[in-house]
Image 1 (cartoon, rainbow, N blue to C red):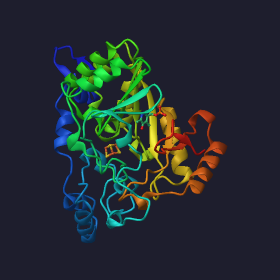
Image 2: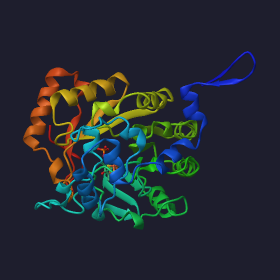
Image 3: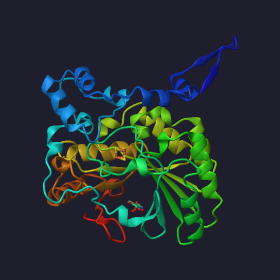
Image 4: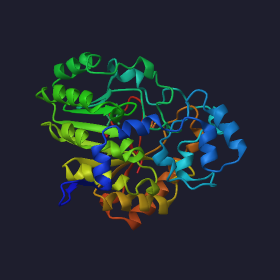
Length: 346
Ligand SMILES: *Cc1c(COP(=O)(O)O)cnc(C)c1O
Ligand code: SF4
């Protein structure tokens, strides 16, 4: 929004600021916190926090934008946003059953970076970069450096999509596709739109939550300027992730005509609580985001301490159903390698 005063000077409103500074989301990425000591100091956590984080971050480093850290409560080691991002010693436990590739990505690879597990839908791993390193991530051991990124590198994947008329929806995933430049994404969207049997493009991203200024005019231009129906799946796990200016970013998406869905992961100590899940669904629904999936944790090595039992998860969903309209209750699902769809638990 650009307001012109009678003297002709543009007055920058807060939202104009976000949109008119194309650099800002990239700057936020550059300025993200990578040093456990800095994170613990900013949040006034004890020195033991630093030692643990340094030890646990060795194979999956800390990475969290300052915008997200600003939402955390100083002095609270159990803050639900902190727990998603701070490396802790329990990541070094490796109980049986927790592996490097829990969801069978390797077996589902069609061409480098292109995965197909389900009929009609193919997933393109567009980049290894993310706007945050989520400690529960099932791709924490993914060989990202081997992932081709950029329009030239995607040629083989685009050709495979063009050759398979059964595929109608392409998911852009990663990593996080919105860490890529809009010019690159616009070219990809154009190539996909030129494939007649494709109908929809679905973007999975945590950037609307982590760095809401990412939802800028350049992004909306390619996302809504294509003949493909655009869907954005945001990933919020806790209602406190959904405050201004995140809500304003989500509104920009839906006002532009993009369908917005949310996927959460059921995480011990973060959202394994009926009040938290109910408030998450209420806030999403209030802002026209459909609570799509609540995922059972994928059993990736390093994330065992986040696991909630299926029995507890099922009970939480049962309680949610007594409190919310049916459309606001997410489907509680898990991914079982080799199954033809995500498996509904409740
Ligand atoms: C989860 C997933 C999808 C999408 O599944 P939906 O049930 O359509 O949301 C597609 N491809 C892969 C490889 C996936 O892991
Ligand atoms: S943004 Fe997604 S891919 Fe990246 S670390 Fe988080 S859960 Fe994993």
